[in-house]
Length: 224
Image (tube, rainbow, N blue to C red; front, side):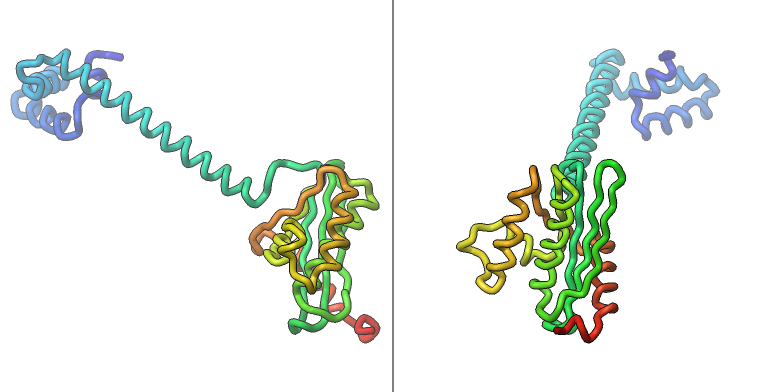
């Protein structure tokens, strides 16, 4: 670093501005003007002491900014991880719809595998409420995963009711959903390293579209 660049790096904005005015007023060079300005600011301690102080200040600010960026990166990773979890070989998304609620039910699900496997489910599911439809969608995608031999499976849904119910203790479960929970947990137990996680609704649009397609395809026979 040249002497001028060293002085520029150490000078504050106001000091650089003052040195430019000094150079313009007296006709001296930029480096000489900046040195004179910094010497005046340093006072009895001398220029070397001032430069040392400014270098320490710059290092402290660089460290502070690096720590801030690291905290932000960790926060972003934590937010992503909270919804998506660690990478898995197989991933699935499910959703259920009832129109009205209770009413005609449709289930939708998507299952993907590490070798490009893709299974889509869009089926009418009789008559019931939205939680029952969500559970039926979860059960359908677990059955599909078991049939295809999936392992290391991460299943995602946007129903807090179903996610909390299937992951929680039996004593805390909803009595009206007990049969669905028992069936889903039995399927999960047969799939190696399977888990069920909640994610926001806007991240579950593919499964939602499949469930809505199933409701739209509802016919009289599906009410039986």
